[in-house]
Length: 483
Ligand code: NAD
View 1 (cartoon, helix red, strand yellow):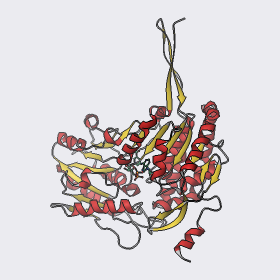
View 2 (view 1 turned 180 degrees about the vertical axis):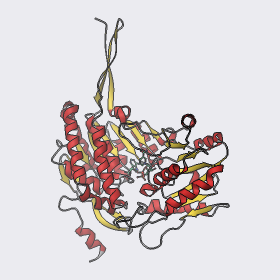
View 3 (view 1 turned 45 degrees about the vertical axis):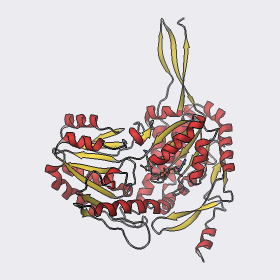
View 4 (view 1 turned 45 degrees about the horizontal axis):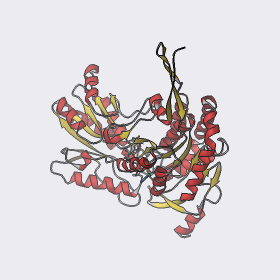
């Protein structure tokens, strides 16, 4: 059978790989290929939504909005919990699909699915009451929070299901209806969640449409979408913000990062090495808030590197379906070429020292060895830009003030961390790092009840926690004279 025939057989004729529009599973007549990054070959076809199908999804969401908005938090919470339970129950069944389209090891795919369900429940458990600002001689002033209407959500490929489901929970719990677009690199598991939701939620409340970048652009300019919740790169985030201006949509942008971690000379080096290895290489380094630059005090450099290199060189790279794989391939060809270019440039620089890894695996698939490089200057692209891959630069410092200045010398401001046994000192350093989240003696924890987002070009607004979820609501002041 030719590859085209094989793809035709995988065409979504049986309700698999379908958009969810107005409660119906719809395939349309346009498709694009989804590639398995472990082989570099297409393994499935995904429906490709037209502008007409997007309009149908938005109209359905608009029709569903009044009843869903009026339903109340308690009932919406029940339905989100039920969807979360269905996702958790389907985790074993869906994980192989997530591994095929993303590349991540099977256990990590299961983890993403079960954590998605967990976070949905956490988000739909937040209390979001209206508030009494004051009731005194000057009058009574209330703060009331209303749903916005139709939300458009646009997701990236690194945690395709989790990042999409965070948006589903936040938008729906607050009484909005939703049109969600997964990344064209990883649409299939998200669409499979649509099948789980189809007979659960009222038609039009949750709409899933797959497609390319054009579909995202149509959403950001759509006249009947009230808010865009976007997670992706800085470059696309800027386009989203510009396009949303035409209709003055509310916009939340969760963008890229170039997180620095500072290892002070009094750090617990075992803890730091384990934390850096986990944060820098989990998901093949493809995490917005991964550690992407290590600054270590000169006096403990060798000790830290010995421990870090031991951990990173023990990671097994391979196909996600093999049972002992720790790290799969880079998710797509474009990203693979980008990380390769950062790696080749870094290796060629005077003074660069590859401490482990450094090679691209030949043969099929997009595999790069987990790599640690020392001896680079601040001007190396691997240090200055967001590599979003398993190649980590380690730099040294002699004064903490200098390390803080270097960590802050970036247009990014998503996360940062500091490792020290001295709590007061660590907190003082944390206060000087210009990042939306600063962790002390850990890095990269994502909790749904804690606001998350970036300073500077890493973001616009916050998601998660009461503060973040309020961005899915419109504030109304109700004011009257004192009685
Ligand atoms: P990307 O910006 O290329 O794509 C993200 C989404 O935007 C995709 O669904 C894509 O189809 C869509 N899109 C592309 N062009 C568009 C346009 N003009 N208008 C509207 N939508 C458009 O990002 P990516 O490569 O998928 O994801 C990786 C990036 O995401 C990294 O920079 C990473 O740091 C960032 N990220 C940030 C967070 C966070 O919470 N801050 C979380 C995960 C990933």
